[in-house]
Image 1: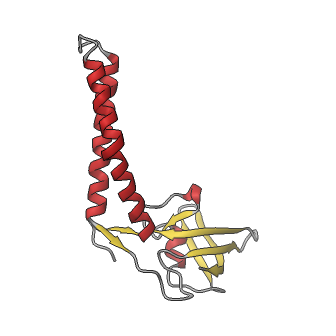
Image 2 (image 1 turned 45 degrees about the vertical axis):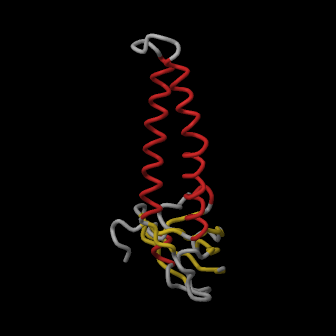
Image 3 (image 1 turned 180 degrees about the horizontal axis):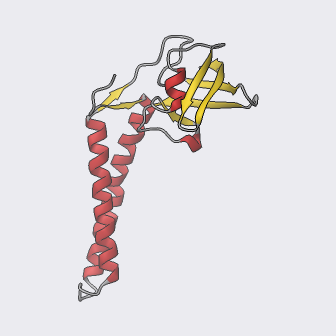
Length: 156
């Protein structure tokens, strides 16, 4: 079980966070600073919508930088699972038993999860159910909408 302040990441997820942080600090931050300077040059700041927008952008940018720095500082890079066993970092293909639909997912830490890209968290109902299982296993998935079964078709 991870510590409360640990941020579970795959190696590729860690690199993506570092790249985003670098982009925000070296490209976006100077752009926002320039936008603030330009807005100040327009005069009266009390009714200057450009200045307000630039300051809002700066606040959002700095909050994201702070969050990324925290996640990187508390990152725990996840080692790949044992061969054939599902763990964080595994790409799996499952078949929903009820309707025979197949789906492919990559199991990642909650920070990297993006269901629209097929990246599900190890803390999600399917993630919890399949961790530690192998190809051919049929598992019960407990979700807020009820229980269902999936069969593990492949693991990479």
